[in-house]
Length: 409
Figure 1 (tube, rainbow, N blue to C red):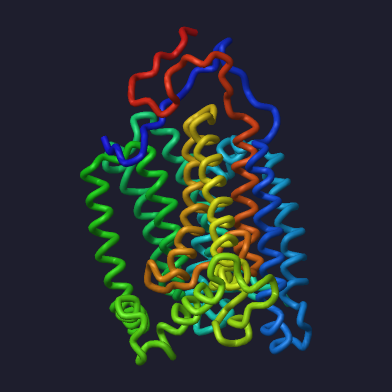
Figure 2: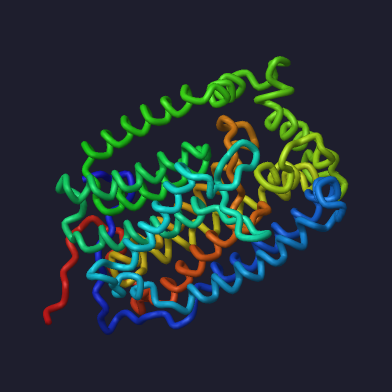
């Protein structure tokens, strides 16, 4: 069995254990704190862009505030819905998670073959609903986590058999391929990350893991050479200070470097940054981390990183204490998705990875990203209300690889 992630073993509810009744407090605080930090950052980063595009310097701030209200409502709703409900409801003999996934796939396919998609910045990622744009690929991430967790939780022997491994892997690969063709390589990578984290936790054998890695590497290389700009971004990543790249494919990174360099340790002051004034593209969305680095310095960027590390710690803790395999896999997939996306965004903006457009969860401007992240956090908080706490200090660790003895009926 693969040992990259610890093996999840069920826990028995005995007299030494008890269920929680309230959502995890640190996660609840993070759900409130991260969007509010994002709101402040967007207020500063979007003033120039908002005025240029709408004549209102507070346009993106006001819109994000409305999205935030909707996001909080979605998170609270999902927190109140028992996550087991998604595994119990059936329609025409098929589970609800399948229908949710099928709806996402149908919408993504229709966007690829028809004109229902809205074109912006050269990509067909959005659907216009009046004055509101919705990005289905963002909503696909929590739905994929629900589907995979439910399907794999029913296989107590894991995904050792080829058929149990092949079907969910092909589903994730298909959705990621459709999203990559929009083109949206960043979201496609996150979909693959969520799928792989759940498959690995479901005891994927090493041979299958190596096969997926090889297939993923080949697919990534094909996606890079298929679009010339992606190959140029890879070349610019290897030589970011080459003058021939600084005004085109490496422009994002070069201006981000200037922002971080200007911010130094404590920053130039909130609202005092210069890169947001049309020097750095997308200062309120994909590169907002660089604006934070310029205005709040290393202190601000490290503080934000620590918040996401805390999110990962609490999320993995919820996964370790979930009462069943469905909750464990679901919490793990959601946590890997949120934390992985944050790390990917930070790594891209700081030049540790080739540039690809991907929002910083809860912080970047954008309704679809905030809604998807809020739904995911709401589900995670619901799982935390059903986690098991232990009264005695001595017990086997939840992630132990030793066999677990179940109590006799």
